[in-house]
Length: 336
Image 1 (cartoon, one colour):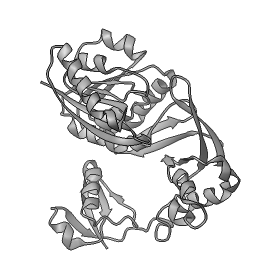
Image 2 (cartoon, helix red, strand yellow; image 1 turned 120 degrees about the vertical axis):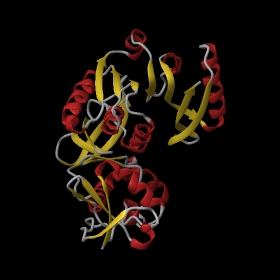
Image 3 (cartoon, rainbow, N blue to C red; image 1 turned 90 degrees about the horizontal axis):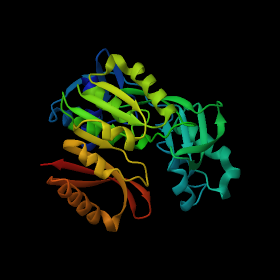
Image 4 (tube, rainbow, N blue to C red; image 1 turned 135 degrees about the horizontal axis):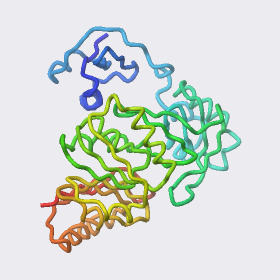
């Protein structure tokens, strides 16, 4: 069977290209080959036009994937469309699945657990979502199957991230955003990362680019895990990460300026002015905005820049849904 052979550092981007071309074989597992990765494909002729090296090798099928592609395919005849809307929004973090189950179908947890295990047979814990609480946005979770723990090691974009869901906030759905930002960074850049958490953005950037990153985070548990994560990945990091434990609004004003500022801003927090003040060239500012107010948000950014004596170009992209008509967005701001 055909596969594409690429350098490990290029695997994520190559996978995206193959998926866009419609020739990535999701039924088979990629395989590591020394410093290279073998990515399964369905058509060796089409891939030749993309400039990849093609090899012939047997790659194993993903367990159950030849039958079960997703949770919805298993449960579609057992639950209503509205119920499936809740169930399909689950996340997998390391070997832990996090799922939202409406009260009216909680008595059918076993069916849901069995379906999740068919799609993801590697799971060791399945937990039910509760509500966010406290200043650090940590959720309550109820373990409904598996080991009694909420700690795991999550792998993404070539890094390993130790997570304790009982103590810190972590969003696996930002994987693509973290990779996108890493590709925008140039070697040698000085980067400020505000609201750094357990360092997922910093780790991915440092994995690919020789940047000097200063990360600021208030949550002591997140700082502790972040330092563990630097140690966990130190052999594979091209860049350096300095961690400051403290409130962004206290710590950042005492720092100098940076080539690039990244702010994965918590909901309800306004750090736009601070991010703009501390950047010399680029700001990537995340916020939660109603679809009718995206242009208003853009105008506010331009106005803030001018008040600081700066001109800017602003591009706003929707990153993910938050609730009906409200999106998590990223403003990519180039200071001129």
